[in-house]
Every structure is written in structure tokens, then in C-alpha cells.
Image (cartoon, one colour):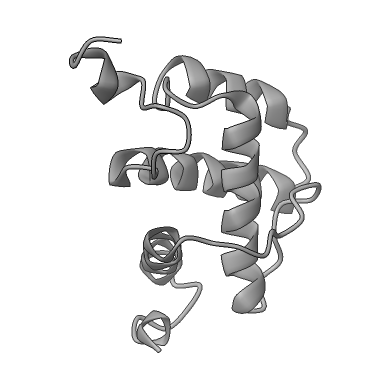
Length: 116
């Protein structure tokens, strides 16, 4: 892997970048909207779309686990998560902050609630 490749294809185990988190969170909230409105969608297809575009350095399983981390943040706030994406226990602080900012921007939590 060249140094140019590392920006688009991070090595395994490397922390997610803010841009990768943002893409995952945006996709998660799209799926949540579909779920809440009882519209059919395919989670695996969404993961593959992310893997081939916004998050090319992560595999589908990694993306799915990140989605479950987002579910964990929603659970902490008593918000229903996407069906089939059960919350995972270990969530990175950067992701918690980013998800809580997204929740606040959508009016789903108080803007100050995520700072506690």
C-alpha cells in the first residue's frame, strides 16, 4: 500500500475518521427514516453502497458493526434504533459525540443533553 492509498483504504483496526463516521451516521439516519415509515430497504445493499463509495476502506461487516454502535447511542437516549441493528456495548467516544450532534440537529435530543 502506498501512502496515497492510506487515505482511501485505511489499514485494518485503524480508528474511523470523522468523514467515515459522518457517512455512516447519515446512512443510519436514512435507514432509520425508512424503518420508522415502514418502507422496505436492504441494509446489506446500503453497506455495499457505502463500501464502494463513501467508506471504501471498510468492509461490509465493519460498516454493519458501526451501525450497531450508532444504535447503542440511540439506546442510551431511549430512542428506537433500526430493526435488526442491535446495539453493541463498546462505542468510540468520537462516534458518540457525532451521533449525539446529529440527534440534536434533528431535534431528537436537547442540544445540551449530549454534553453530559
